[in-house]
Length: 168
Image (cartoon, rainbow, N blue to C red; front, side, top):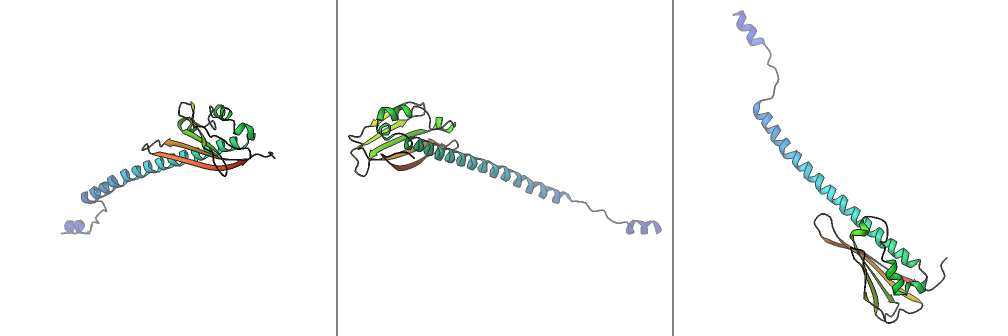
């Protein structure tokens, strides 16, 4: 009888049962792949943000370059075409984007001059304005590219008016 008493009074040790372990593994198996999928989406979003920022910088740099030209150089199409032969900046993005510069007289346009810098760096003259005037021009700079992930077409653009005056 004493031997039986000893067995009854013995405390049970805490442990996980097989069903509990299997449910925990199932939950872990569902959770980890979703974390990796979310991480992949976040990395694509970061890359898309970098591309958009690079495009804005590209457009801004080209616009500032054109804005700082002498007005006579700005309305000289061969000068602008030679200038566009080099990328707007030294970033890798500039080599993978198509850049379009449109120049027209302002406020009344007499046609537009449009130059396109393609991915390979060649600059083509798409159209020439009959008269760009001698006081004000409207300059539009746009950059377009295909996104790294998904290959969607994206573009950034800015327009400014430049006057024939002295630079300060």
